[in-house]
Length: 349
Image (cartoon, rainbow, N blue to C red; front, side, top):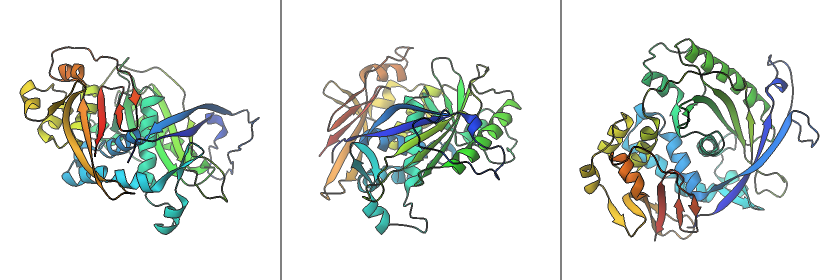
């Protein structure tokens, strides 16, 4: 097992190209001179980034936390190893396994991986610090009335200005996911109106659809993210239900098996130094190891331990020794990843 790196294309489309009525048949053109399309810099993602983003995306529904959910999230280590491959440096779906392990639509568990990629996109490109499940966020804001109609997947919070945004996440094997983006626009609009009616005004609203390329020789296309902003940026209110940065760190502690610390951070409460004394161990100068995942290398069939931990200054922040989060550099190597939020993962074979 190693920490590989792959690229994903990113294409943005202006919202006016999507039909208001479903009866209008419009398809995305791959032509270079399309006036509605903007090609952005490729998104780079490593194995550790994708694994952790996929696991965290499953934990946005905090009211459904359970041991089974944590185990399921960790299991995606093997799924990602087997199903995803390399196509000229770009992320690709392994066509061989897609064909063997297919369901009726031949998609084979790509939905959760797409959720992880969109979760990562929100972090890297949309400035998200914390990502909530939409319904979970509404519940935390004290909204008890259910939303009529379909809602988007996520509400994300930006730590800099506390603005919130909405993100609808899609995943498909189709080359032109027009219907997904069109439906996503409707979900975002519905979600915006629902929050506005309860005094919460989002600053941004996006639809993100991951279209997986494959390693099949007959289909020469790369994986791509189609992004569209249904409503563009608008005014917002500075309102958040809790300390979002603490909420985001709670997910890592949950995956590390630290339930009591998880509950404290989820409620916006900083933890005690005594909580960490029995929860972790210091690892050289890299910081505090708070837990480990014992996973299987899908190709060698050997067990590998993935240590997850925190930088020392992040530990000081979580226990209240300092009030500001340090800005961390992101570093990646074959056996280690230091994330920009002050956490890290290390392979211990």
